[in-house]
Amino acid sequence: MKPRHFITLNDLTAEELRSLIQRAIELKRMRADGIIYEPLKNKVLAMVFEKSSTRTRISFESGMSQFGGSALFLSPRDTQLGRGEPIEDSARVISRMVDGIMLRTNDHETVTTFAKHSKVPVINGLTDRFHPCQLLADLQTWFEQRGDIKGKRVCWIGDGNNMCQSYMNAAKLLDFELTIACPKGYEPEQSLLDATASHVKLFYEPKQAASNADLIVTDVWASMGQEEEQKIREDAFVNFQVDAALMSVAKPDALFMHCLPAHRGEEVSADVLDGKSSVVWDEAENRLHAQKALLEFLMK
Image (cartoon, rainbow, N blue to C red):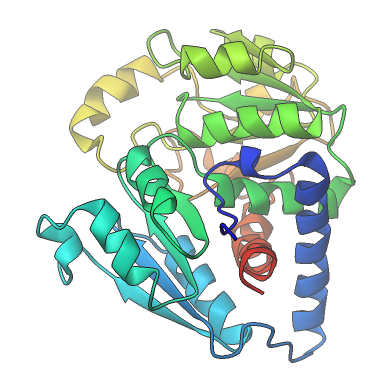
């Protein structure tokens, strides 16, 4: 039987996604109550990192440990992955020795190719196109704070990047409205805009997009690998900071999220990031609980 993979949110049905979110909330409660639960005892997760990480590495490694299993950190610097071995061969070999594989890579095709040749579940821990694990945490945070997201208005401010594109998939899957505000030239992929047009609207003016929003989300202006574009992006995004003025056009009880790390004074003002509307610290913690629910779903 072919393993289930988690490459984008579209690998789940809406029912499965809602079930995962509720399970993450339950697992969070169990940990707070000190309940020992080890469904993955003696299981091993291989973690392949082409990009550095804080939240992704700690949450997956801690999650496997809390579940009674273990995690292996694999860097291209220390394995044949960085020395020209074909991805297909690496997938065939690694998947014969472990029970699951998580990859955080530069190129989305690396993960899709890995999954095609793996005998065990493959999880996308981040690529240049999608970051579905972060969306699990974001959605868990919303559900904890406000209940189901169906019918709500979510606003994305900034680059049409992997986070934005994951929100686009989530909007269609869970039936909420997503408004995107980005500078011209930084839009999400056109094919994805076409596929999610029933739930996604694109704007070039932040206040238009943020109007009456239930949730406002942003990310850094220059992601890992785009450092040489920092100055160009600062100029392009100068009017796309999430600040108190922008939050004021959203609903009075609107929440603010950011996948972190954040640059106060760039994509978000300090008073918003550290203010009462911000749930970024719960959001960051929920990477652990949401991914535990995912690991249980795929590997148990």
